[in-house]
Amino acid sequence: GPQWWAMGRQLYEIEPVFTRWIQLIDAEMMKINNGEWRLLEELIGKTSEDESRINDTNIAQPTLFAIQVALSALLVSWNIYPSSIISHSAGDQADAFVADRLSLEEAVRVVYHRLGL
Image (cartoon, rainbow, N blue to C red):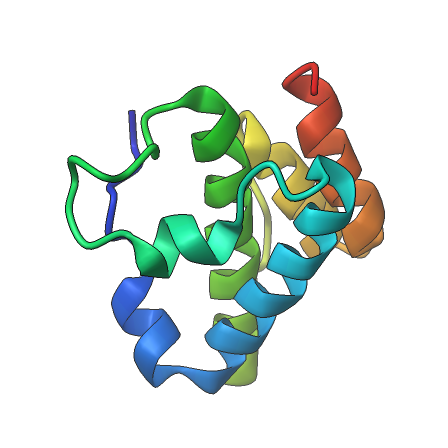
């Protein structure tokens, strides 16, 4: 898949806007998944690829969603705006949120619903 166990780690460490969005999404995901897993633990807490569960679809899809939303927020903070949006899979919910069609809560719920969780 397109995911990598340490994706987003450097941005989380050096970009406050990216960090804030990852934390917001982590909090929203915790409400929905009842603490089954933490976005921050998967993105930041794992110290090796062997520890990571990023190749588990139920972890990968919400994590990719979070990276996409946080990266979009970071680009906007640099005054870089999309002229169009093309998406696939969990990117559909990220794009709907970025386009202001879904709230963050709604977008996270849809990600989980699509996974059957």
